[in-house]
Length: 195
Image 1: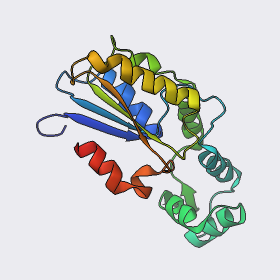
Image 2: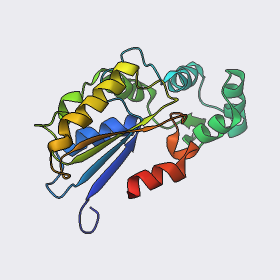
Image 3: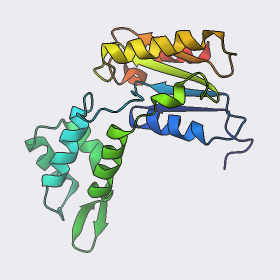
């Protein structure tokens, strides 16, 4: 529990849908929800998450236990992943008596991703359903939002233009920015959120 409660929530990608769902059950004091390049609708094909799906598949193909972090990273490099990703994933290794194991349960991760790809949270953004100001930040160079998804977000933004600022849905486009918008354009994103 945070002191004073939560006035705003921000989520990127998978976390964006989590934040949107959480806002449905949030206490009344929640004022803003920021969804960063996370399509509220279903994406059964996993569009925009190809690298993530490749990482999961690569992890599932490995044999555990591993003798060392180096061996783990080398195995992932042989599968075509980059060294920064392999090093980041190595932070999840746990030492047991027989060696290193990947900590998070991959079957559980698959189940969460399957749920994420099939959830349709667009109804939570309807003018009569919004509980707080919701900001959809769309990365223009990301494949997460198809053109029709962008149109839907912009239409919701226009439809809620007459709503009070406390419940209005706003769509923001950051052109020429990829899915990792908080890394590629942190200054632009921060300026948008501060405004």
